[in-house]
Image (cartoon, rainbow, N blue to C red):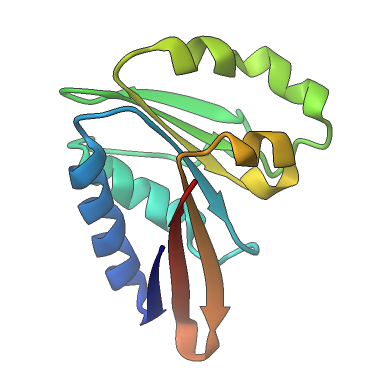
Amino acid sequence: MAAYKNLSLNQVRLLAQTLAHDLRARSAVIGLTGPLGSGKTVFAKAFGKGLGLKKITSPTFVIMHEYRAKMIRLYHLDLYRLKKQSELKGLGLNEIRMHPRRIILIEWVEKFPKLKKSCDLLVTFKVNPNDLRDITVKTA
């Protein structure tokens, strides 16, 4: 487990890009947890940039976006609007997991404990005063 204290949003971006660079040669499922506005989407966008992607947009309304980077596919999910486990079925996560070169980033993974348990990494965000964040990165 790694803990990062009192990070600015720019430092959150740098952490995400570093993590993306470290993971770009392998597959992983990464869960992002934390309250609304804690930096999950900022992290996801910077993670995509770290993989060499130009533009990452929030999938809040469509639930999932797929991006093809040079060496790997990135699947970015935002589960904020989902309420029931059954709503996950239509996303094809089992099929996506079978892809040999993919990273799945899941915002709001804590809403679905079974999915959370399947994550290789869990990144937890906490907002501090002065727009700073504490981030914990934990391997499963």
